[in-house]
Length: 99
Image 1 (cartoon, rainbow, N blue to C red):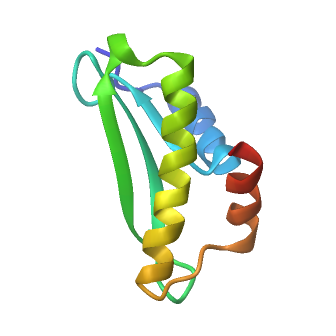
Image 2 (cartoon, rainbow, N blue to C red):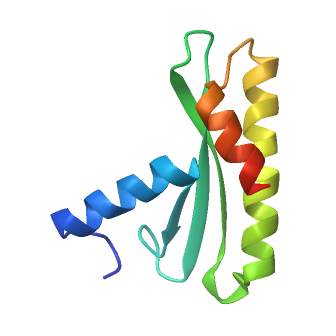
């Protein structure tokens, strides 16, 4: 029911992810579950995976969203570093300003 199927809405969502450096889905995969995801990078500045956090939509307050975003980007950067990868500098700036 909540899956984005309209091409214009999907394009807008992709643009939002590019601007935020994080993906947010509100019940797109499972009813009553909202989730965030951030990329993990390899040594060639290419995404090799993601770190994701899901929570019941009813618990997704603005405070919780803010904490998840902050901790998720920090964790994605830490995992990238531990794997010997590099977060692209433009994404580092986006994550830093969002924290």
